[in-house]
Length: 112
Image (cartoon, rainbow, N blue to C red; front, side, top):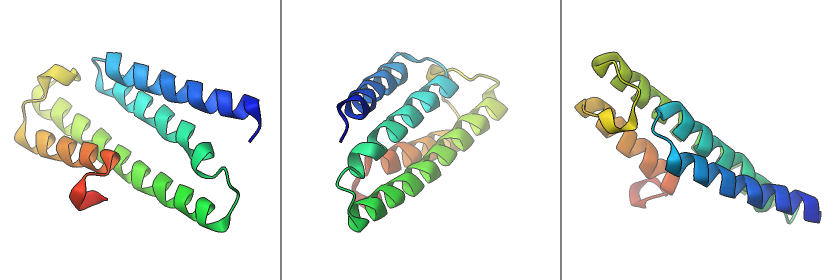
């Protein structure tokens, strides 16, 4: 892998993590998670083997589905509470959808 590409990928992982941790708005948290997803894809597909490309494609599709679920959760919460703040997650449906989306993104047991 080209050293510049590796540097950009690792720095985008650090940037995405920093944005996600420091955000207090759902859209900024989602943006940080998407930067992380796009930063890890070149590292997954680095060996240029068909299985590595297949793994990167599957990873991208699962992460895109989880991101959609996260956006739906935040939109549902904004619909019921009128707030986009992360601290204002009070509706039970939104909490369940957000927990499912984060579990998929982390690859926890039922979603691995």
